[in-house]
Structure formats: C-alpha cells, structure tokens
Image 1 (cartoon, helix red, strand yellow):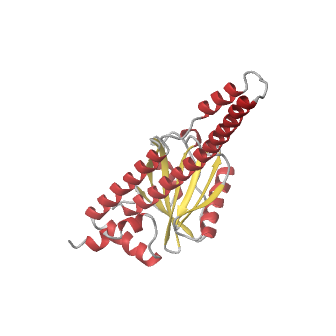
Image 2 (image 1 turned 90 degrees about the vertical axis):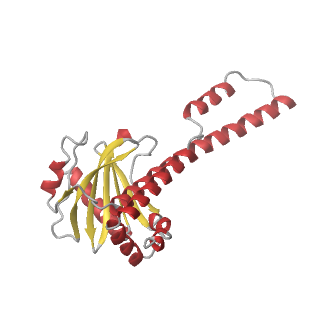
Image 3 (image 1 turned 180 degrees about the vertical axis):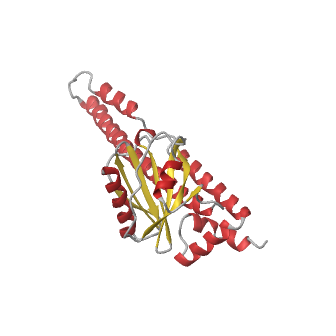
Length: 249
C-alpha cells in the first residue's frame, strides 16, 4: 500500500520521536490521508486505555487511612512476636505511603500524556480547529454555551504568536477548550478545563517534558491550563505567561 511507509512510523510520530522535518511531513500527510488519520486517532485511544489500565490497582486514600487507624488503636508491650508485627505494619505503611505518592505521580503522568495526545490528535485530524480565526474576539465567544466556564485570551500584538482557532475537547469526559497557536511554524496547543473536573492533580504550576513535547500547566481562577507543543521551552513559557496575565487582568 502507498501508506505502508507512513504506517511504519506512526507510533514514532504519536510519541513525537521523529525529527522536526519528519514531524512536519507526517502532519501534512495525515491531514490529507483519511486512512492514516483514522489509524492515528485509533492508536491515541489505545494509548489512553493502556495508561488507564496501569492505574487500576493504585491504593486508595481510604485504604491508607484504614491501615493507619488499625495500627494506632491501642498500645501494646513490645515482645519478640509483637516486634515482628510492628515492623511488618510499619513496612506496610511505608509501602502504602509510597504507593499513594506514586499514584499521584502516575495520575499526573497520565493526564500530561493525554493532553499531549490531544495535541497530536488535533493536528492529525483533517480539521484541527472548528472555529478558524486569528481574532480572539471571534474565537472566545464561539465557546459560549458549549463549555461550562469562561476564560480570557491574551492580546498577541507585538508578540511572535498568532492564533489559529479553537475547538471543543474532552478529558476524563469533562468538556474543555482547545486553542491552537503558531510561533515560527510550530503549533502549540492551549487546553483549558475546570480544575474541579480533573481529579488527582496537585495545584500550582509545573513544567515537564512529554517525549519531544514541552508542557507547562497551572491553575488560575478555578481553571486548569495546559500549554503543550514541540516549540522550545522558552516559547511554551512565554505563551503560558501571556495567558496568566490575561487571566489576572
């Protein structure tokens, strides 16, 4: 098939492991090939399912609380056998505590990976945005009535960024806004959700790396923002700062 050579690189494309020129060539191909675009979206969904399965058996906060209560009910004299049980209980608490911390880390990694998938899936689709406009006063009103929150878009005059448009998106079945920006031929996604709809994420700002994508996330005004793309970390941070300033005004 004519697409066999493209299909052989599809996983590397979805994991952003190709070179910049190869990523751009792949972007152009999947936008004009419905078969490869459908396969890309199917594999993104499979990646999400695998991530969710990996978190299925993470210990819960309730389990940890029960273990803490059961080991703190009454004091006892430490004899040889009791010492064995006490040591085992302490070891279990350490494991549970580590599991809770690991669960939070795994949850964050899962969400960051899914946000990166949203970015790739949008660019792989034949229509990356549903409302096409460089005017923030056109794009922002388009979301009214479609998502259960409002947000502000930054003024881009005298910056290197340009707005491409926006679309609705979903994460954990929660609706959100997905905006796409350009900076020096690099596409950057800004994805926004209500903070309350995304469970298990620590508040505050974080910058991380998802394969070759840079990602920055923060909470502001009850909303969770994600900025992700293959642009350099400085450009990701600059766009994030523009959104932070717009949300604070």
